[in-house]
Length: 97
Image (tube, rainbow, N blue to C red; front, side, top):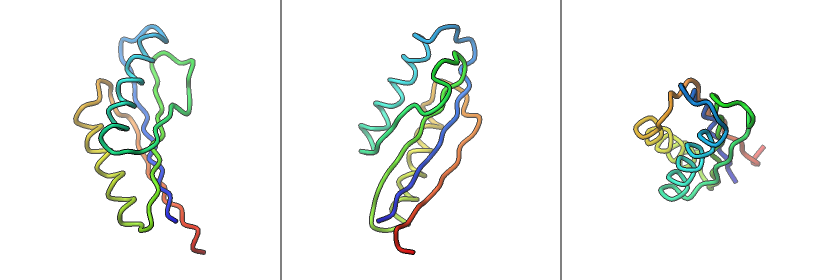
């Protein structure tokens, strides 16, 4: 089993409320889930108005599949995100020693 985690950090310029942040987060999470069938969650800075951190997680039986899926997620996010993507990182974990 191979598990991949894509961390995405966004800067929400001009956002001054948690309600506005939640609207952006909900929309982006739903679009990612619908297109790629992956798990998505807001993982940090829940009470910060201008920072959004999402984690995207996928599982497969091959590293190449995990990396490919996360790369496609990142590509889509870069194209559609209504906020500035300021940082992203990918981690891949394996249970095969």
